[in-house]
Length: 267
Image 1 (tube, rainbow, N blue to C red):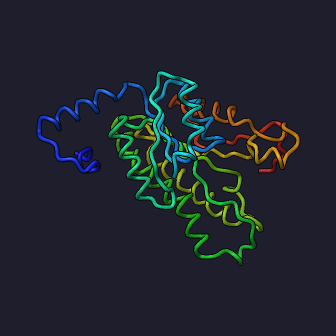
Image 2: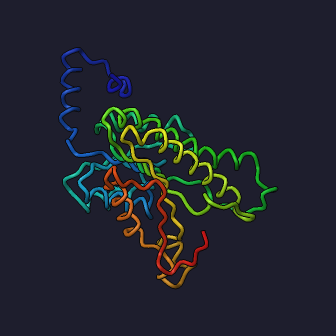
Image 3: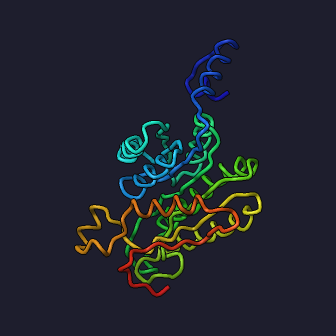
């Protein structure tokens, strides 16, 4: 077992059995929700909403400090659920796979995966994109998302249920002369989401491309948008994620768009 290998321990068979039993005992019967990219904005609201829904919460980010607000928010929302942090870097898919394996080993089978990581929002002409920038956006938006989904799908298929939601944007539907990297990454993420949905819906796995056609009401956006009605409330967005997760299999959404009432939209 990986327990003693990771810690560098050498356990006797009796101690190994005791450690295994102890690990099993701390696992609850609650569904496990993993949020990859759990920062101070939507990640924090998602952690709290799914904790309120009585899910154990696993937060996956590069640093614990980056997920501090989400950890605290989830624990405050429901003190009876298990909330833990696991380190991974979405630009290194193998670390995402390792984190998913640790979550399953320590908390139980994953029932909900929310991939909320995204690439940098860089303004440039398409001809000015660099190979390094393209590689990084592909790693975060596609390879990291694929690593997370591939890690949880086998257990979901075996159980005949599970939800995978990819946080995305309207950039997945149209190219951009000024933000081409973001559009390229989101186009590819949408293709991944659709492919997984078509392949694994018959297995009972609900895969959803969550299109956020809006800016979120977080401090950095408030400085740019003085009218609060132009921003989407992260808690309200998280409520919609929960609603999608709870959809009956006879009425699944695979493309969901979210925007505030004030948003002017064309696609």
